[in-house]
Amino acid sequence: MTVALEIKNVSHKFGNFTALDDVSLNISSGDFTVLLGLNGAGKTTLYSLITRLYNNNSGSIKIHGFDVRERSVSALKNIGVVFQQPTLDLDLSIKENLEYHSSLHGLSFFEAKKRIDSEIRRIKLDDKIKSKVRALSGGQRRRVEIARSLLHRPKLLLLDEPTVGLDIGSRQMILKHVKNLCKKNNMAVLWATHLIDEIDMGEKVIIIDKGKVIESGDVSRIIKKTKTKNIRDAFNKLVGI
Image (cartoon, rainbow, N blue to C red):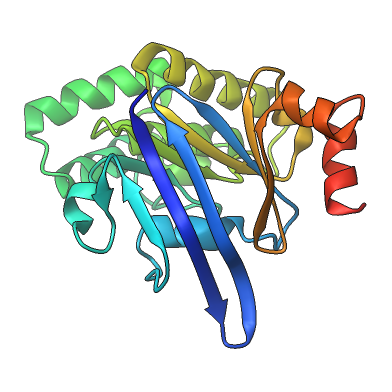
């Protein structure tokens, strides 16, 4: 399996506060991996380091073999990102938001149109492509952000709490859509959440607490190791809830 994301011994501080403490993890192509932790566990800080919003002063972060510090352009062109806070321009239409993103990635007009049309059909918003983002529901906006993150065909997709505040139907639709991308496109996905019901058996989970990775592996392995009945009980036992 190709290693899509390799993080080794990464720590990060804000003043005297340690947000991440010697974090190491690997994600392979085709993996849907859940980064599970309570709010404040360090998930967003880790994403900020991977995407170079923060500089990692310790350890290493590699995306498909490219170090994000030494070969930033080569590394970052392989990722798509959906941040926790919405980043769409509310006063532009869906089409205009996606066209702008395409131009930033250097796609030609015709290639951008083809990819935008394909992604809009995939997220079932064909009839709203000219609607302003402001008029969309929360779930629809998230679907547009995911579509936008895929336009340049990334090999690694990072999503930070992508379903927070959405209704059950929207959450399930987005989860199903992203998991299908892993299977069909062999894409690696790191899905950060504190919502345990978004995790299915057979998936890989990385549990982070107070900036440290305290357990990782297949759901069934973690349940067996913690001698619990389900991943919720295993998580609660590991983080001391």
